[in-house]
Amino acid sequence: MKSVFVSLLASGAYAFPWVADVPGVESPWSRFANNRRLEARQQSSGGSCPFNANHKPANPITSQYPYNSAKNGISGKGKGGFQVPAKGDTAHQFVAPGPNDIRGPCPGLNAAANHNFLAHDGITTFNELVDAQQNVYNVGYDLATLLAALGLTLTDGDIVTEKLSIGCDATSRTSFSPALTGFEADSSLTRNDYFTHNGDDYSFNGTLFGMMDKTCGSNFDIKGLSLYRKQRYDQSQAENPNFYFGPLSVLLYRAASFLYELMPSGTNGYKPDLATISTFFGAKKNDDGTWGYTAEKIPDDWTNRVSPYTNNDVTTQILEMYLLNPVLFGGNTADGKFDTIDFGAIKDGKISAGISATDTSCLLYQLATQSVPSSLNGLITPTVKALAFIATKLSPSFKNLGCPLPLT
Ligand code: HEM
Ligand SMILES: *[C@@H]1O[C@H](CO)[C@@H](O)[C@H](O)[C@H]1NC(C)=O
Image (tube, rainbow, N blue to C red):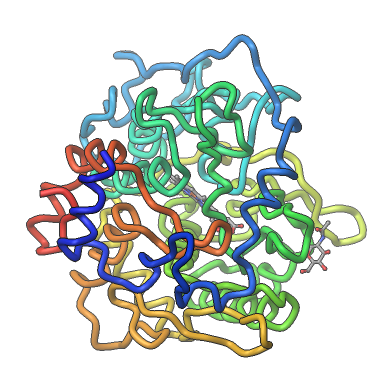
């Protein structure tokens, strides 16, 4: 296995400087102040992750309530505009999470688990993730598999069982550390930075939700969210000495696009308004105007988007949102400076306006298949097994785009 990996390195598939981050080798990575975070994370998450001895998988879709007919990780019909959960489908009604259920930083997955489209205890699988994204949100098959692959490879997900926790480290059930929080980034919409809040980068923060609402003027469109992303970037850079906005932060723009692309309802003119967004985020307004937390829920009488949300669509949105308020990729360094990074389409800390959609798509693919410098553990390196697994799922579509393929 090791020699396969070494030959991958030699072939240049991992052509960026952090690959030198091995014991005894000084790498550019060590300039960043936050190299030691993984150790702290492993210590702080120990023992407190809920455990459900009686794991039940997601409730399957049926011929009576077929949704997008996405089953067993394969492509569904890709035709949305239907109600979720369907009238009369008691198997997918909202059930609040209990003390043994794991929830994490992703409102989209938390809501899907609360409606049993993913296992209610939050220990899910690659196939459940691919199916639920199609059946609930009408995410295109290409993007659904890419996101599920990111979930597995970026978190050291267990490729043997294809299992992954949507929140904290559930190692005892998934064999090795596949916690989704492994790739939580600084300056999220409604989640704290890891470093400034004692490792809690996954809980909903009502103050941040209120800030987002105010900046967006209760209309969570691309303009408002782009501005809010920039505000969060500035805030984190100022407050967090270990601030790191690496390649994976591209995913923050992706997630922000979900508010106006995946969450709005046809029964509400597909408006990304406060009622819709607060319901998905589990945000509840208190009497004094501040925001508290309940549980993530699909709004009543909700119908999903009509056309599938594809890789192409999401990369267009990522680029557009970034370019409305561009920021530098990089991180605060130990000596109080800010260093920029290069990775794929990111050059000198920037994604330039001239980049093609194809190059941006390849960037997402590279995040799932290459070693990525990360704020939490220095470098996330997908295992050879993980790469072999996702090569079978992803490579055909990305090969057509001309992206560098790690395993061919
Ligand atoms: C397999 C599929 C998915 C995976 C593995 C995943 C994973 C994640 C992770 C790790 C984060 C935290 C990122 C960060 O803040 O640093 C996140 C955030 C987010 N996700 Fe997902 N996600 C998936 C699908 C979805 C879908 C389908 C939706 C849409 C409904 C969604 C909506 C969001 C939103 C809105 C955020 C930002 C939350 C915030 O910053 O407050 N996700 N997701
Ligand atoms: C929520 O976010 C605000 C703004 O960044 C921060 O000051 C506060 O400490 C956070 N609250 C919690 C409970 O983490």
